[in-house]
Image 1 (tube, rainbow, N blue to C red):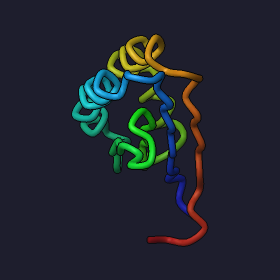
Image 2: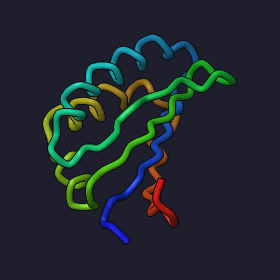
Image 3: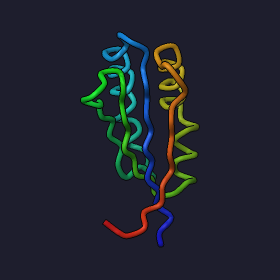
Length: 100
């Protein structure tokens, strides 16, 4: 089994914040994808709720994810999202049971 991990992160915005959240999330994509340990990093909008966004991510290891969380673009993401979200980010870290 490799050390690769998968992350599902859910952002639930306050009513009326969808466009602002989308802009904040979009700014974090390119620098996150440029990180050495990033294998996949894509935000999605939930079609059943305009203010709900879901990230699917793959990282080379938990250490790579920890390094991501120390980057300035991640810290800025959290700072900018804080006043827009209805509740804290819901982050689940997963290990695949079988290879893709």
